[in-house]
Every structure is written in structure tokens, then in C-alpha cells.
Length: 107
Image (cartoon, rainbow, N blue to C red; front, side, top):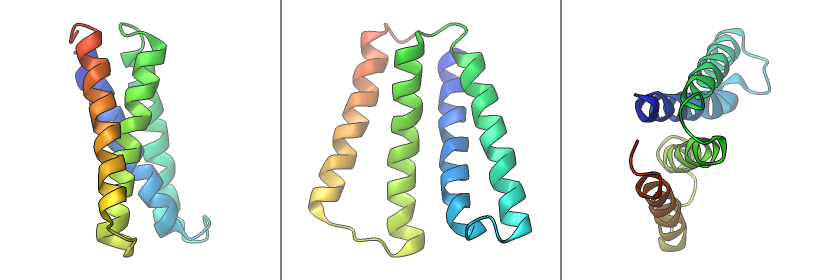
């Protein structure tokens, strides 16, 4: 269950990092509020996940999910460059996330 909470926390991390762009420096109230809610939900879920998972593993996976999702959505939503090098680096982060999951025994 902790891994599911951690994945969900990572998805909310993606939401709040993308929300930062939409809030335009916290000048737009609705995106700012949504970003704030996503930050709180992400942190609560991360806190719940580290009750059963090592904090270093959980934090690395959480930030990895956020980095991969935010970088990918940056290409799709914000016209950031989609280069082979960028895709390769994102792939390395995914490999690291999978490796940490496997190294933890998947539980």
C-alpha cells in the first residue's frame, strides 16, 4: 500500500509543479489555490508512505516521479524541447525509480 501512496504522492507532485507555471508567480488565484492543495496532498501522501518505506528511497522515488512527469508535461504543455538527450535522461531517471523499487523488494 505504501508504494501506491508514494506513486500517488508523485503524481500530485507533478500537479503542483505544473501548477506553478499556470499560477504565473502565484498571481492567478485559482491555479495558485490548486497548486497549494496539490502540494499539501503530495506531502501528506509522502508522509504516509514513509511510515513503511525508507525515507531515502521514498524521497528519491517521489522526486523522480515528479521530475519525469514534469519534464514530460513540459514538452507537451509548454513547448519545451523534445530532444533525444532529454528523453534519454528521463529514461535514466525512470530506470533509477524502478531500480529503487526492485532493491527494496517491491514492498
